[in-house]
Length: 60
Image (cartoon, rainbow, N blue to C red):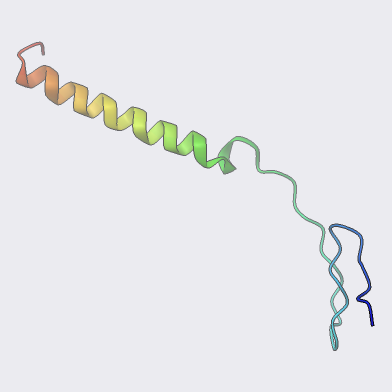
């Protein structure tokens, strides 16, 4: 017997399930993008490293 196909985004029916399919919440925007957080962390690490390099070489 072939399995019934559900439209994308809908939860397939389950035996004994009484809940409704929930709607996905909208994108959280800027704060949910890991690339942004990675870039900020890397930039901060480079700035701290640059500070110590400047101290070592006598620029600061």
